[in-house]
Image (tube, rainbow, N blue to C red; front, side):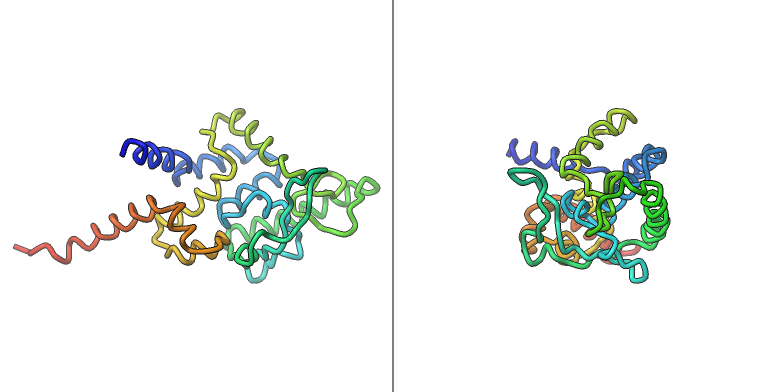
Length: 222
């Protein structure tokens, strides 16, 4: 029982609430544009680090407001590796909020200007990575994690693992009453059981709060 209680407390403390997310973006206002976009996609779309890094502009539909997750960038034995997602469900189309679409439009213009500034330094001719170095090549898989640790320490934001921004996204959706099946599809889980097991406590809490909202229907009026 004590172990279960400790696990639930850890689970709750490993994600940000809405106020902390707002504070996070306030703290990131002066960070490079690409890191602000990275945070937005991690939270708004629940993307894994590897999925964010694997995004190219051809995967972003600014008209429909969707991201096509078809490839990831992970660490291999001798460097980074570009590959397809680990499961069929991981390959998916994720809708993003209109506010994030607008930010992506601004970011795309910024990205093009940065490419023009780089001129001969730009060596990447095959891919148009959203998150790239000055020469156009994709970030190394550990680069976002390194930045995240330094950033949270520098601006005094409560540290959670970078991967838990994805958990934060799911938890916020649960709190908004979004069905577990939709969340499972957005996260690219292989099975809804994975979602239920990972976010079981948050789902039970949301279910309890939903039940309480029905209380007024059954209370006899005097």
